[in-house]
Length: 191
Image 1 (cartoon, one colour):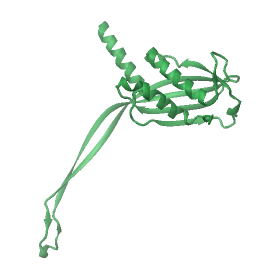
Image 2 (cartoon, rainbow, N blue to C red; image 1 turned 30 degrees about the horizontal axis):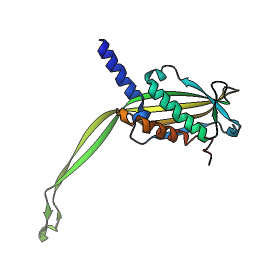
Image 3 (tube, rainbow, N blue to C red; image 1 turned 120 degrees about the horizontal axis):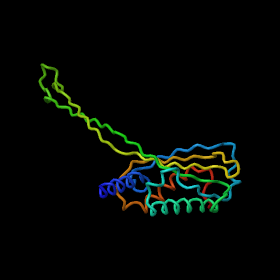
Image 4 (cartoon, rainbow, N blue to C red; image 1 turned 120 degrees about the vertical axis):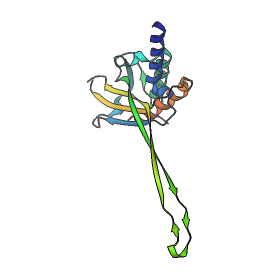
């Protein structure tokens, strides 16, 4: 039973870190408080992972995320402080079970009628449509940004992708997908 729990834990880690190993494109949406002047923010602090969300990540994965976000914030001229930043950042991961349905239609013809008395043209035929369903996991990385003074939420970004189980891609996909998420952030990279 101990072995089975270890296997289940390992599989859940791989599945929950969609953003680490996704090779499909990432969809990013965001929402912002348009009354906030983001140029006032010079520092940020990391509140950590939302309850139980970070439990599913290995220490290596947490470091990859932290480093990727640190690079993105530094490129925007923002400095990390341990606590009390102008902005406070929290992260969480959500995974949903999805089903994809694909339909394929084959058309079978009895051939071409080339006789003049029938007017020429195609003969009769029939079609068959087959359906296939594929279950997959869709993961969402959510970043919430709060004003450090008022504690009000000022921005939210959500990156969605299909979960894959290839841990070899984590080092490359984390920075790429964090960059995709941060592309919607109100403070743009410095030139």
